[in-house]
Image (cartoon, rainbow, N blue to C red; front, side, top):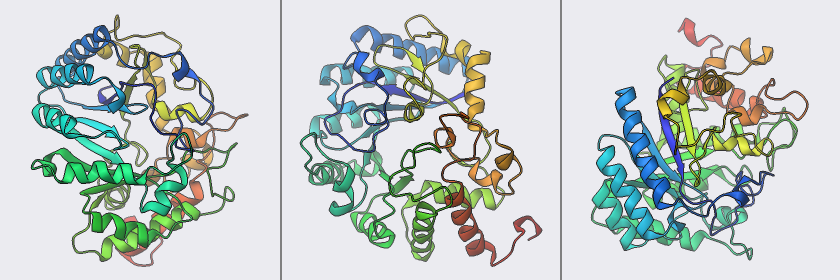
Length: 375
């Protein structure tokens, strides 16, 4: 198992309180027991360990700084980490996923000096974004996020620093309005994500297992996308189109390729994909208590326990295994298959949405046919 992505939880707290957040508002409490930020010793261990991983794998991987809000990390520690990663992993992608509220010129200068990019979480125009992405007092965060994006865009190195936005879908919003907002904002890419939910706890604004609110919303985004002569990149739509055309996906959540993903918490603990937190408290924890301070990542990736975790990306439900669209949706994210009684052995709560969206893209690419492979 080769690691494709290492997610560094450099800060365990956040400066805003998104109601849909899987870290703080889906029942997991592990963040309360973690240091607020990585210590200097943990930072050094991370840099050393990731350098060893690169040498062991003889292949690159993405390093993503995450949280909480990663820019809550004290600046001297952030500098030590980014400079250390730049020296240890010059050929690896290094990115910060931020809510944008704390971006300033010091951050941009540091990212420029260390060849680190930024992606900003933004759910759409103010009425859409501020429905869920709020402060602890309940106020909106749109203006702060937009100010962060504008600060990046005004930087002379903006084309290199800014990779795009991460947007959590609100199916009650108008998809064309959201698309046009991002188009006018000039973002280079949009990564649309479905809200976390499962078969025991439906995602917000999803009426039932057979409803297609999210799928039909993204289908409308697809129509805007293909009609646009100069669109931003949209990862989930690109992945699905590539898979329907016989290609490969580039990120987990689509297709049947296994992705090696490891998460390192602020105390150095190595965990599973952090989105699993939304299933139940501790769902992202390994039985083996691995830590970056004493464990070698390449050896962890070779263990049965880690490979069993990676295989969670493949659905086990007979419904999924017999579906003719499995090669495209891949069963969706594991967290969305969860049920309190049957575990992960279920179709995704978004199964009907995926089927609707895939059929819509398929008909757009090939016409109204039922067998893509025959074409």
